[in-house]
Length: 68
Image (cartoon, rainbow, N blue to C red; front, side):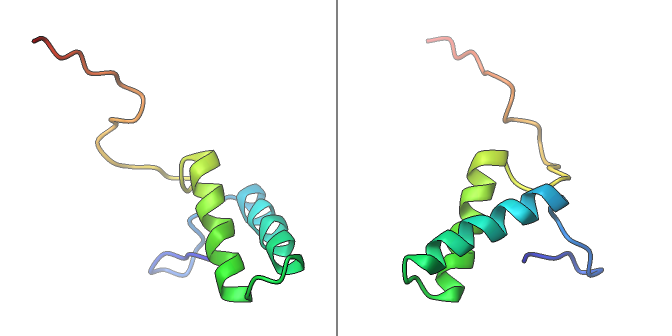
């Protein structure tokens, strides 16, 4: 599970449970533990937009209007 430098999690408890459940499904299909965890966190990031503190420039919600 991804962690910050101070040892705390970047994700909510719900996101961690979701990733565990997804990884378990991949493990049942014969995927290695490392690959299953990698795919699970990629899925959580895609679905939820990342961790619980999504800093940054704020571009995600804004639509830019480009004049041609």
